[in-house]
Length: 198
Image (cartoon, rainbow, N blue to C red; front, side, top):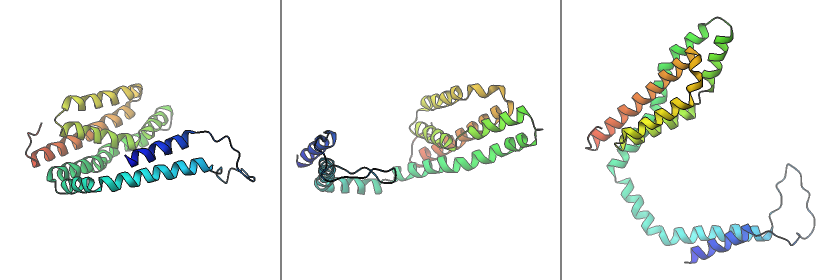
């Protein structure tokens, strides 16, 4: 109850506009942040106290949950497999797509080469990490239909690149390598914890 009270007071103080001008003067430049009003400082302090009180009252329960999680073999296996699928799968994708990139660099200078390089460079590394993470999560949870939706969403996002042959090949090979990495690790993880592989 105390944590909720501190949180409510902090939110009220932070959302309130201070109509009382600050005493003295202040110089505002882009190099220095604007001075924080007393009510805002009190609001931040109140929210900090709410967090401390909440953690203090919930500490025994949090410690129990943390201990259970640390001793949970299924969680350890799934977390390890997820990390391998996401980051190890990135190495597999790079290995699979390097020949396509070399083909693009071998093309004669011109519009086709430039547009293929631009599209290949636009493919973000973060998108691949998210793609492999989602694929692994859905496959490890036994939901291959949801994994197919991830692939469909990526295909829709990349639909405009179909006119550039090498860029399409690059994205297709990269996506297939991501699927293979996520599928292999989800099968291994499910088998390790005693679940049916799909």
